Amino acid sequence: MPEATEQMDHAIHAEHASHSNRKIGLVIAVLALFLSFSETLGKSAQTEAISANVESSNLWAFFQAKTVRMTMVRTAAEELKLTAENASDPAVKAAMEKQIDVWQKNAARYDSEPDTSEGRKELAAHAKEAEASRDLAMAKYHHYEIASAAFQIGIVLASAAVITEVIGLAWFAGILGLAGIIVTALGLFAPHLAHQLL
Image (cartoon, rainbow, N blue to C red; front, side, top):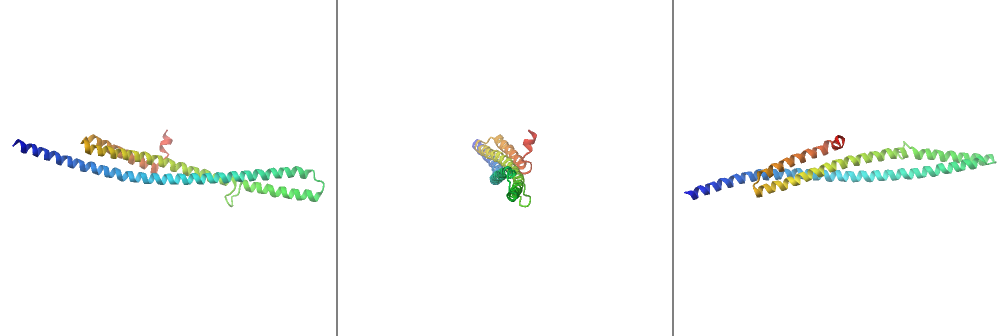
């Protein structure tokens, strides 16, 4: 009879462990689901950041090219202006002044060209917008990376809880999963909040 009681206790313990393992398995599945979300969002944010960084670099390079052109045209205009002051022939002097005027207009156009948005001022504004977009995407990316780490560690701890039957590990895995969800939400809705608070 003691053997039957022992077998009954063993069966009850196995049933209880099986029930606990199912719950922990569900926790692992939920953590894996949120891990896939954070990884997907992280890759998207990383791609967006790289794209915005390339756009910003291109705009700043165009800005620098416009600056070089503007400087060259202004220098040529100043040099011709000095030469025109010493010109004795009125027709030559008039032609030089006409060329100076053309170069000064070109220099002004290189500095600001609102019609095409290709002046230095417009290019600088667009480059700063691209930098802001890059910074936002990077802030999101960092949140998603932290959330992914929390979900991964949670999955490992929950798996360890199944093997060791230490239920505290499963609770800690759940807490990490909740922290990962919060960090993911911050990445989606308030990626600069941590920087503002610090």
